[in-house]
Image 1 (cartoon, helix red, strand yellow):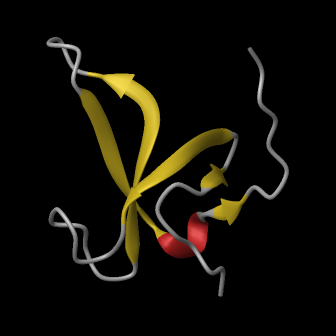
Image 2: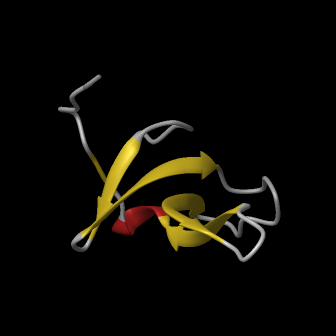
Length: 66
C-alpha cells in the first residue's frame, strides 16, 4: 500500500492533486483521502474530493519555479 500523508502530490487517473485530509478527518470515509485538485467554489473557497486511497499514486518527483 502507498504510504500517503497530507501534502503529498498524487496522480489519480490523468489528474494531479494534493492530499489535504486523511481518513477520519473532515468526514473523510475509511480507506479514503481528501484531495484538492485546484478547484474553488463561487466564493473562492477551495473544494476537495474524497478518493479511495488505492486510486492514488504518489508523485515522488516535483519541481519548484519562481
